[in-house]
Amino acid sequence: MSALQQQSSVISLEKYEALPEDIRMEVFDGIPYNMASPSQIHQTILTELLVSIRGYLKQKNGSCQVFPAPFGVMLSSSPLTIVQPDIMIICDRNKLDGKRCSGAPDFIIEIVSPASASSDYIRKLFYYQNYGVREYWIVDPRRKIVTVNYFADNILNVQYSFDSIIKVNIYDDLYIDFAEISRLLNL
Image 1 (cartoon, rainbow, N blue to C red):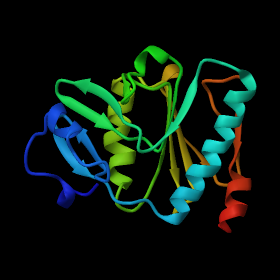
Image 2 (cartoon, rainbow, N blue to C red; image 1 turned 30 degrees about the vertical axis):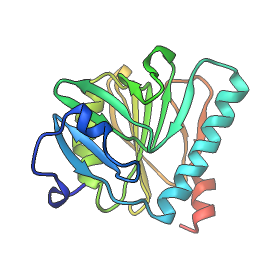
Image 3 (cartoon, rainbow, N blue to C red; image 1 turned 60 degrees about the vertical axis):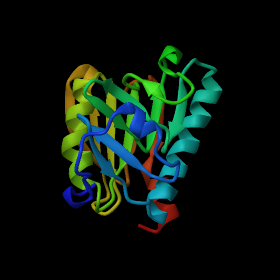
Image 4 (cartoon, rainbow, N blue to C red; image 1 turned 180 degrees about the horizontal axis):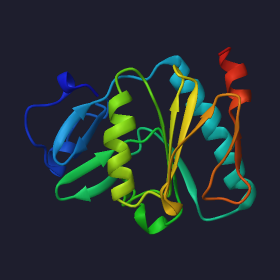
């Protein structure tokens, strides 16, 4: 979401909800930002992570659900702040209203693309921490680094290489093997 993609005016929830479904947009403090289409590498990483997390949640029979983009999250209605994380885990089903998650998910993963880097590393880090996300991962395929922010214990910017097995901190026994994902991508 570059500054060039930024829209010129503040958007209301009504205008946001009236957008065509093929428009990918996030809103920060009322200012809309268009989102670029994801790449093949981005979608491959997303799929592998989603399958791993979904398999774990299904095995545990818990109340948490995992959702991929473009499922929206309304962090604030005033000023309007709506994001579309690449992957999110939501454990409080009362936050789900049929359209989106209203409130902070427990866990978010963003997969960095060239157009989203500053938003993922700076803007979203700020918003996710301040609106109550418990854990936020930034997966950077170009740099082959995963940055883990576990806000619940104030652990910030812990970096792992793509050959690591990384613990999802909101669970006692969920680990993601990035070496396996790297092999699939030939990275």
